Amino acid sequence: MSATVREVAPGVHLVSHSYVNCYLVEDDDGVTLVDAGLPRVWYPLGYALRLLGHRPSDLRALVLTHAHFDHVGVARRLQDRFEVPVWATAEEHELATHPYRYAHENPRATYPLAHPAAVPILLRMALSGALRVRGTRAARVLETGKVLDVPGRPYVLPTPGHTWGHVALHLPDRDVVLTGDALVTLDPYTGATGPRIVAGAATADSALNLATLDAVAATGARTVLPGHGEPWTQGARLAVELARAAGPA
Image 1 (cartoon, one colour):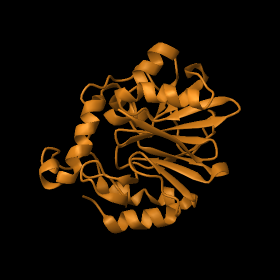
Image 2 (image 1 turned 180 degrees about the horizontal axis):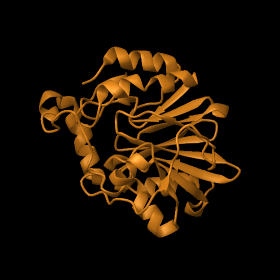
Image 3 (image 1 turned 90 degrees about the vertical axis):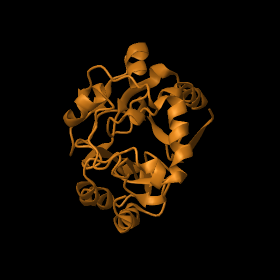
Image 4 (image 1 turned 90 degrees about the horizontal axis):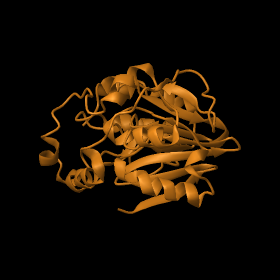
């Protein structure tokens, strides 16, 4: 299945495959991968690295915004093949090992019936390996409120709600915040677009998710890079305002 690869901020490259985004962040020390998509992103990810003049051995870290199955798809393979260190908050470690054991507010089965626009999205994700994701081996502890010393040097923002240990990553020198699934521009469970949180089918606590978007707004970043959907370039504050207006689904 095809993937898109494009630069979305200085030294930040989007790899979008089957409605799931991951990002390559470059600097002089190598490359950081933010989130690990679904299993079939393996070859598109390798292509993206080669396109940028890198090899898999240039990956210095995989940083997980959270550990749902669609964000850890190739994490184990990167660990086994290239010994890439995987970083996740302590609250995400159990989920990273067992990526289907996640909390969610609402029953998942009803969403395709209520939101038929989501059916092609969910089917595409399934065909890309969404039903057979291996968990990671031991991950390193990602601490919030600090800069992580990996390429790009992201500042780690706590944004719990979608999952209990969810984080966003701020790259102030690039005017970018990577929001994972704390704020998306495509909800895979409803097919709705525009800034919003993910439906309760995959969100642990929507009210907490909406409240902790304060951290995203406070960055003042111009570019918001979500885990699903198109990049948002009209500023983090407006994205958060629109997400709150959309509310939970």
